[in-house]
Length: 236
Image (cartoon, rainbow, N blue to C red; front, side):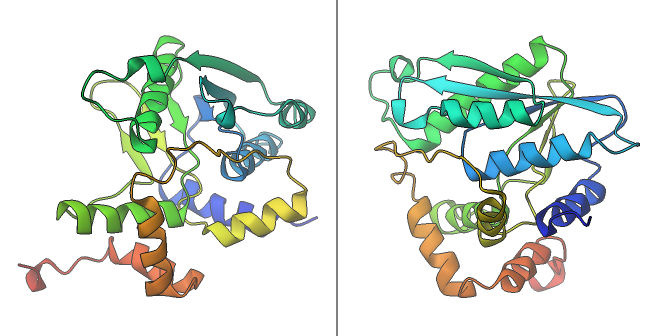
């Protein structure tokens, strides 16, 4: 039986960026949404291959925002895939210092920092995050327009400070492909309805990306590929 189209897309990203290497212990960020759930399902299926010389654990960062918790049904679903799932509580609101403003971006950074600390402490070699193609391009637009800088979330980031890499296996998959897969697979996923989720400018960037590509997956792929085909002689 052929594997789902999404998994073939992930396979290519994993191969292109050497995301999974022999002996890897991978910590997967499990938010409870469709993106991280699809990524976890991929890892669970990849472990069944004869050349799967790696292991992984799903870690859910719980916060004081009830809107961003993983549902019991989703936990049962991960258990049915034989996925080791752990949880770690982070008191995000009490970390906000005087003069700071709570935002989706700030909260995400706090949770990601906890993933890094947990991974280093427990001997993991990789952290897998569920950012997809749209996320990467939206971040690109946010940095270009908001900061005047050309950078985004890379498919693989090797830390200099730690023996650890961040990988984004969904980097070639657009959001519609993931939605179709989730619907076909009948995912029991949760959506964060936190009041701060749209105050980072991502909603505006999403609208700009839609205006540029009209939602076309191939247009998004060409935008991504342009980052790997830079003609420096024609730049300022």
